[in-house]
Image (cartoon, rainbow, N blue to C red; front, side, top):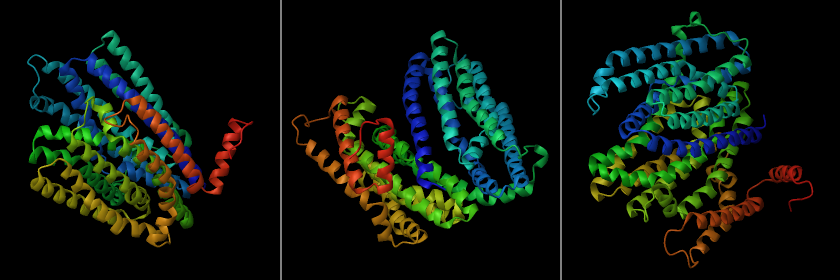
Length: 515
């Protein structure tokens, strides 16, 4: 298995999907915000925030399906795979039906908890029931992208989702232009969310003609067997949600609701950084399950080492740019002339937290969970979550600063990451912690030194006396990236990687050669 080739191909499609979603997401947000009434837009936002918590009723079965598909496809045990997938899909059909029934009979009570203007109750009740219907359909169909990921067809999933995003933006623009109303807009959104899942189902059926999906193959024993893995994966996901979502709750309950806005503005840059750096890591879980099923332990070790090295290579230059231009990026995102100092340092701490997590957590967790270590990962995640809450609450009660919550998040992450995850990763790779650092971290750090020096030198230029405009940031960032590429070419890339890049360059520009 060509580990690096697979990771790069998958990452390219993931980055294309991410860029398209980011750009069109901003465009559709502006269209919806200006095209809907304030009450319609608020109800719309509320519905999709509820949709985001749908992962909590996944019970880890989506991740389990990905793992079992990767394992059973290797052994070509199609009968067992038919039983496993039929059981999971039938289970999700039941979950969708329960959600629909509870929502149908509890709609009035639930909507009564919201402050809806008199006379709009019937209108929003209909919208809510349409949303519930889409949610119920989406549960079983949502398993098919996970099946394709288990088959290592992540690029296919990315391309289908990207097409769905483009179609969604086009149809929403038409709906807003012609004034089709919130009902139609919601139907469009649901169709372009469920439609890609349906397309994935068609592709998955074509790739697995030997697999049968039928409620008659449902087995409660398979539910219990699958849950033995999925419940731990679910708890790992739940701890990650707590790590990422409780900071705002802590701020709102200890300081003031208005202080949450300071944290949100500081976290936006780190959120974008996280979104752009996790794309390569999405390919690691199915690849690890596939290699483990084949018994390719050497390739698993290569995946662990190379996955970490490539992730750090992508993240390090982006981290330097985000840290250096934090104030300018916050201005671009918020429109404020000067960022709040507390928000600025919150952003810097959260950015550092995400960057160190890439080195110690993100790659190894995705691989270890597919190799039978889900219980240990859950306990480490639980310890980090408790440490996060204790540190965050303690610091914010003492110092009364928003940045204290960010500091409270990074402290347990550093302890768990460098004290437990990094030695564990090194041990599984057959290296000492220092040897692993020399292999995956130090070359990238040395390669980034010229870029860091250039960015620091730019601070002495006369126009660096306040926040810069976007044009200057773009020019300086392009220059810094070019310098980083030169540093990576000399210090980070292997001979094989340089040869491949040079060959690719020659194919595009046959009359030119890289030095």
